[in-house]
Length: 272
Image (cartoon, rainbow, N blue to C red):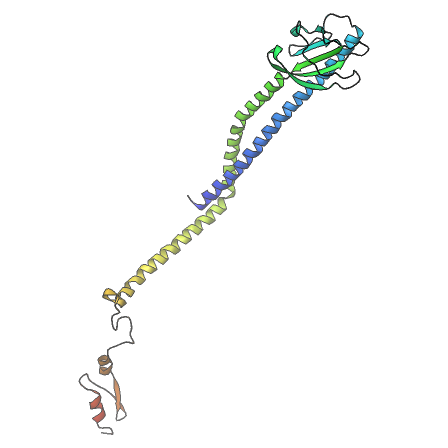
């Protein structure tokens, strides 16, 4: 793999990892925000319905049916001072008192509790308790299921978990194309540098091969230097003597191979 491809792959990997982290954090935030919004809406609805039920009971304390029409996700009870259920919504008629926390006054924002009721399939409810104004200890309790909130949050999380990998794959392909386009001049430069380095390595290898033969010839067999080979200034003394020149009678005379230093010493010197 060339240097350009390695750089491109690393950049795309880093950018894809960063995008995956951002998308994951964004998905978590979206799920939390939706769940929080739905929970807030349920809390507001519970408070409103509890206050309306308390006002209705105060207006007609002898009513036999629960004053607020709750949906299938909501239940309500009116409890007297002794803890006896005076009236209840259809879903829990005949059930004993389901809630026992202290209520608030009708002029105060009702506190909320999260209660899991085994009498209603173990479902979880957000419940508000409000004291009926002007009554002798009557309390209205009203709750709404949180099942829909949890179901909606899970459905959203499932959808995002399926959708986000597809989005991430598309973004990775886009990043691959964009990085390749941006690095095209750099790839060309790196390719030229690679070819230049390869030529330099080949040159060094060729030079080393060419220099190996003269060195071998100079050293001779067994690595022992051969006299006179590769060293023009080192010659046999006889060879130098055979080519030595002397001046005899003012004229240069070349000594033949048979002459020696004694002959040169006894040779007549002077004009002929």
